[in-house]
Length: 236
Image (tube, rainbow, N blue to C red; front, side):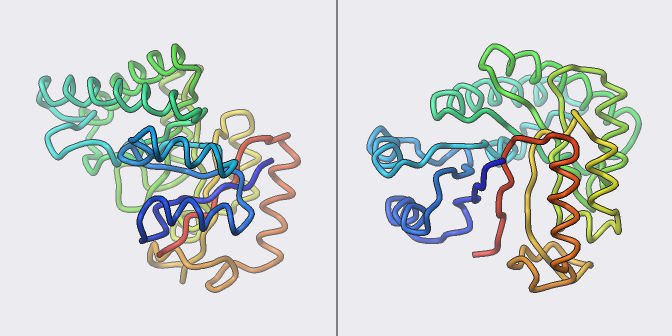
C-alpha cells in the first residue's frame, strides 16, 4: 500500500501546496481535473518527487454534463469531457479515476448511468486507468453495499469501488466487512473521520473513528491483498 493525500485539502496557491506536500513527506497526491494544468506545475511536482495517484473526475463536469441525464446531448457532452479528463490523468500518471454518483435514484437514471459508466470504463482501458465509483450518502448510490451491487450488475471488468471510511460511518457500514465483500473489486480508499452524521472530513480519530476501527480497516485491506493507495481526504 501507499499513502496519498487529496491536495485540494490545501487552500494556498498550487506551487505552495505542492511544496507543503513534499515537506510533509508525501510521495503521492490526489488531484482534480483543473490541477497540474501547466507544464510549470507538472515540472514542479516531478522535481519534488510527487506522483499522482488518482484523478477525481466528477469535479470536472459542468452542470449540463451528467452521465445519468435523460438528455442524450448532456450525456454525450459528459462523455466527451471524461475523454479529456482521462487524457489529462494519464499524462499525470494517475492510475485511478473516480466518480461520484448523481442524485437521481430512479431505475431509468441508474440504467443510463450504468451505460455511460461502461463507456467511460472502456475508454479508460486505453489510458491504462482504473475507474472507481465512490459510495456517497445522499446520492443514488448511498451505501457501499448498494454501490458494489451496482458495479457487479454492470459486470464491466474495469469498474471498481472507491471505499470512503467517513461515508461508511454515515451509512453505518462496517469497513472490514465491506472490504472483505469487495475483495478484488476494491480499487481505491479514502480515509477521513466525522461525527457519524455529516461528511465533515475531520482528521483521523477526531470523530467516531477509533484506533481499533482503523486497525481493523487496515487488517482487512491486508487480508484481501490490497496494494493500492489509501488517501487522506481532509477538510482544509
